[in-house]
Structures are given as C-alpha cells and as structure tokens.
Length: 135
Image (tube, rainbow, N blue to C red; front, side):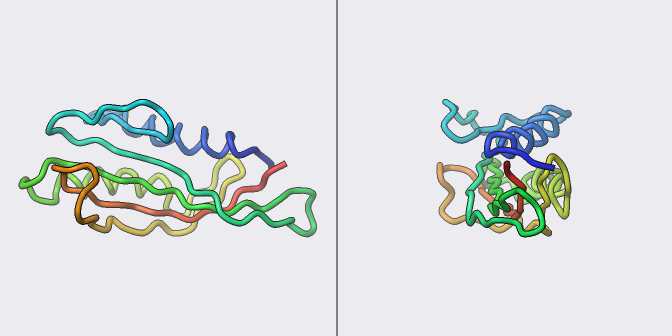
C-alpha cells in the first residue's frame, strides 16, 4: 500500500471526474489546468492541500496528511437545492472512503462561501482530511 503525490491527486481527481460525468454532468476545474467557468450553469472546483509528512513507524512508508477541498458553484437566486444535491454526490465519494492508499476522514460541509469567488454564483465548500501512504 503505497503511492506518490501524483497518485493521490490522480486517484482523487479520477473519482470526481467519473462522478461528475454521470448525468446530470457538471464541468470540473482542477489545479493549474486552464478552465473557463460556464455561463449561469453549475460547475465544480477541486484541489488538494498537502499537509504534514511523517515517517510511519512499523512500515517503510511516509504518512502524508492533506485536505481535499471541493467548491460547488450554482447560479445565484435559485435556492440551495441544486448546490446541495451536487455537494451530496461529491461528499458521498469521500466520506470515510478508503482507496489507492488513501484513507479519508468524515467529510465536512457544504458550508456557504461568501462572497463567492468567482461571482456571481452561490458557492459552497466541502472538505475532507485524509492520510496517504507514500513511497
């Protein structure tokens, strides 16, 4: 059970891409990839913040912590239902999930982000801390 930073990123982004390709499908923005937000339709932004890296005793791996951050954007003035439905789809993917040498804690959110960035959207944010075992 081991991986690299890119393995963690690819496995996490792959789960999001697969889920967001299922109807109703939504575009996803990833770190350092060109993206133009759609006009007045929902979309998702996902990124990983890596944290502490510690030697995992009793193994030959490092334990890398981090946080997956997912922002859900829906048009303003249309209520929270669409946003929360998308957020729940994403939350279910990572809430206490275990895959590809990654162990997620319980996911948090959706929490409203004010002001939305970019505007004019209604934005919520999900977070899920994790630990991964790296070579």
